[in-house]
Length: 502
Image 1 (cartoon, rainbow, N blue to C red):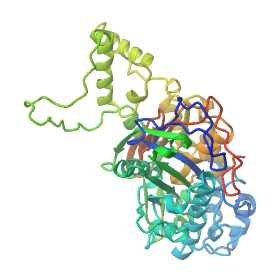
Image 2 (cartoon, rainbow, N blue to C red):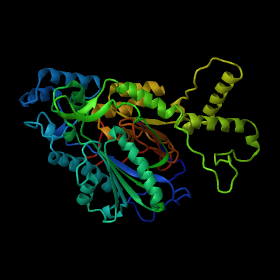
Image 3 (cartoon, one colour):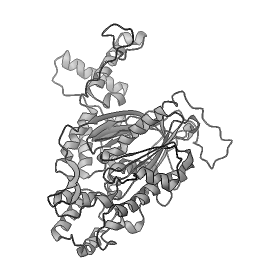
Image 4 (cartoon, one colour):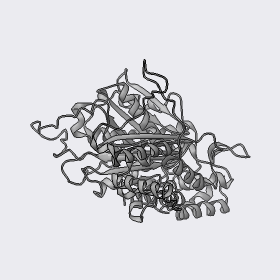
């Protein structure tokens, strides 16, 4: 599971200039935090052509000509679609496995590459057009696709298609499931730390052509019913000259890996030797465990490094700053903060001071007064403004909602993404972000938390003037929205391939 957090910086008090705006628009001076920071210039999500939309009523009839057709399995998949929250007439499939287009499903690598060029190339083209960034300006390229990993890589395909520079730092990530879409953001952050004054392009996608399962086992057919065509692209930077145009800032990144446990999601052959994505019935249960691990459980103990020349035991852990405030309540809250940081990865980093006081009161009641109170769980809606959750299915979203005690209105973008686009794997949370922007839900200074699961990694990111991003079975990224004044983020009219929620 992956949880991400994003925030809109609240100190920006002017409209963000666009390449088309007059040159005399006074740019904002970059802050001292810009150099080591990680800022998102913009992002784009791919919307397939209308002819690729799936109608399950007519599609089921058309699929009867396929050699793999079994009536019982077709009805099973239709039942899964309806129970998973997908629009039965609204999601998209590539032509190679589209029941109304393909005479027989084709899942070979050459055909899968056509989908990769269409999805990833379309998202990148839209993004470059929106931002005015030229391919030769990009210093770092990171692509990801969990299952389809050809040679040359998908990163090489994008370099060839857009003619990026010969000295570009290019990487491709694979085999990490749905969470890889935020795991890679942590890599982008680290790359930008190592390469100041750079621009990084990140392109997450999952190629459904290659993932399609032409067999008969129901545990593998579930993936056919919920996984759909989609992808995204985002530009992240630490260039001071681009700060005034950035939308979000990445603030925190935490990660938990649960590879020690047996996987409930995997790719491999069935009993007949046919490859497919296996989804066990315990996926929602494991997702709940991962959510608790990333926001509430105790992470592994980190080694303490001693400063040079210091006596043994003089660790470099954080200490409260001097001042009268820290002589009383402030020192207590600081100690509670440290205790919380040892016990949880994400929650203590995003709590408000009022929630710290509530937690301190709970600890005082349990330890001093002997009250039988349960574990303190903060109201996440008080420290986060929006939530982009992994749209892996209805049960997955309801499990996250229950685990974080989120109200129904906070779930709208994620359920809308699931309804319109289905499970697009590593790009699901970016479709939720696009929904928020499309309907003007994000304001300057607000925070957005992304929660994602998949693979065996968990990571968390938090916003401020930026956000949280990470990957694995549990990751929490957090972004800080950066737009002019207190105006809503009302994006310009998106290009044809940009996602426009129904």
